[in-house]
Image (cartoon, rainbow, N blue to C red; front, top):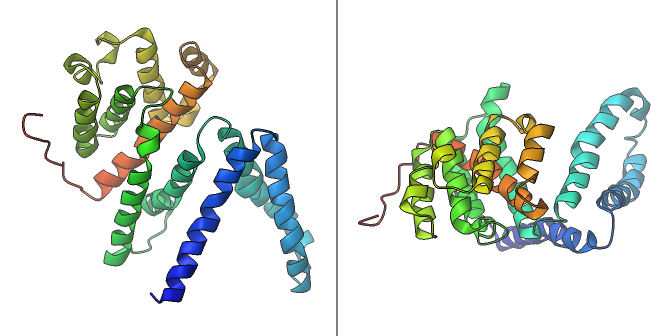
Length: 265
């Protein structure tokens, strides 16, 4: 790649990432839905004259329903939810979760009939992207509303449900390093009878249901979790559980071997 290409690439990264920081600042004072509306409105004010000049609006009336559906699914709903989520989570975590989207699509494309070959360079790119996202995941797994060792065990539980030996080995070890007792580390799957508080057990139940489906968190399940976790804790718990639905699939699909643990671990 030329120096000009690198400059453009760096500029793209900055331009792409900055909005999440500004959204975090804006939602302290502005409604998330108003913010989403303004983002779409500004884009429309800029792009509509260009589309009109190119004659792209002539066939607009013939495709009203698909355009409205696309606008809702691709812009209105995601923009509103991103703004709403940033009332509780950091802009860096938001960027991490958004960065997972292309990696996830690359892994699930075959289930939707897409047979695009990955090839050596594309697989290498996916691995580099995965490593980058994993490095950025540090804020999510750090000490926050929930203690670090508990996040590691939630990650281990989700990894176990996904049968990812690499992830189980790594996060079970990290849980012990960060303060979980040997009995707790051994009980991530048998948490109902393990040495955990009722609150901690409720978190394991919540993560286990989320593994089944987002729809499995119905009103009763959400109420049960909310009885133990405040909003910040529940969002953090959901983010950890959801993130580790992605990582096990990535590791297992690429047959990444289990990392040897330190001697005596």
